[in-house]
Image 1: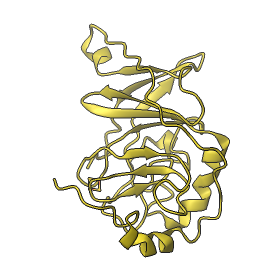
Image 2 (image 1 turned 45 degrees about the vertical axis):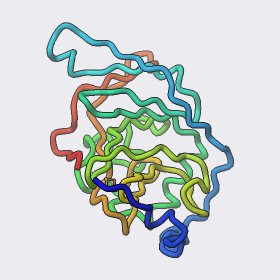
Image 3 (image 1 turned 90 degrees about the horizontal axis):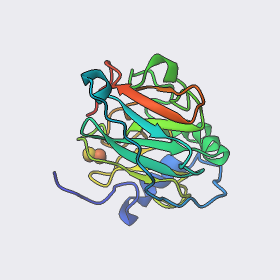
Image 4 (image 1 turned 60 degrees about the vertical axis):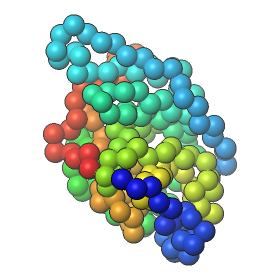
Length: 202
Ligand code: FES
């Protein structure tokens, strides 16, 4: 596929971005550092366990993320701060499916946070347009002047918020997929077990 300038982030496309972003009034007060963190994989001898991935949450500091390979897909876990969570309602008028009506997540994750616990985003980081891997862009203003944080797909310019919900006016048709997962009893790790059957990668 051919990489091209992001229509909403490129200079020539700023007007459209500004139109989309006009309603964004919140601000992210913290500059987040994107740091690839420790991966924790626990391969198991059984076929069932081999399909699962366990990720330790403790090393993931506020605002940071870890991406691990899972079933040949990049699985991202983000530790969202209260400031990041506060951006989610602010961008909803600009989103294609803010209420997550399309089943791109298990029913328990059909909420604004698209998660079992608001702090933690667990998502398959695959763009629903043509399966590129979007970039994690949590820093305010890092994609456009009113950008509040989210994901930017460099292939054809799709944009997602910090819950992986797609913006209107970009090529991607759906929110990114949330897999089936659960927390350990002590809530120090998550185990991802399967794609949600109704969800689509791209
Ligand atoms: S693959 Fe086309 S915008 Fe992401």
